[in-house]
Length: 263
Image 1: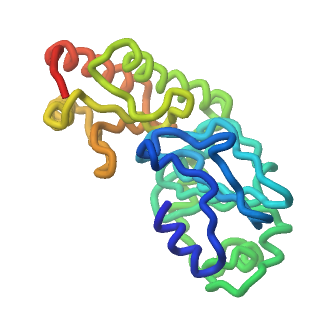
Image 2: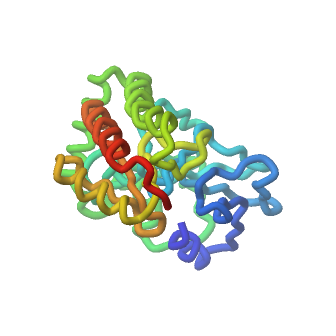
């Protein structure tokens, strides 16, 4: 987010309307915690925070004529979404859509057909639309695989079925975390992500041991981001329910073995 803020400063005035930095981004600001600037052109948000494990359950309201822009890279097509409420949505493919190196853009024609300033050609969405995504040679293999993923989602029953499946997977892990006091979740309960589950042991030494022993059991890439530590279980669309069950069983055994540990 900081990188995005720093970049957009080159093109306009940036106002941060809400932040949960005070609690290490463990919740999503709401109500009076959000203060918009006067007459903003658009409101930008990231629908799912992969690092902290928080997720917007509903899109934020926008003041006046401001349109909504969303980075949905990590939860797009994990559930039904009403894209008519957005002016522009972009999503890197690497979490739920396909291989890295491909980006999906969904935009209202009225927005991209009326650019307000000259941008580098690779950022001119009106130009990309006119050229049907082929202003330069696109990542054809990535686009092809994205189409295959769309077909796979349909075969699973569509977005409604994906949402039910993802909620069930996440609930397996969250329900166990809430049932005991060894592991501590990072995200506020009402803002928890269905894609990225963040939690910690009583101390950093046990975090490291958990990750090491989990990997030996075939439960890999569970280390949390360096800015938060602990563990992070990423359970995107393609991740199987069986993996969540296996993780919970390991968590139960680990918590039992190290019961009584303190911070």
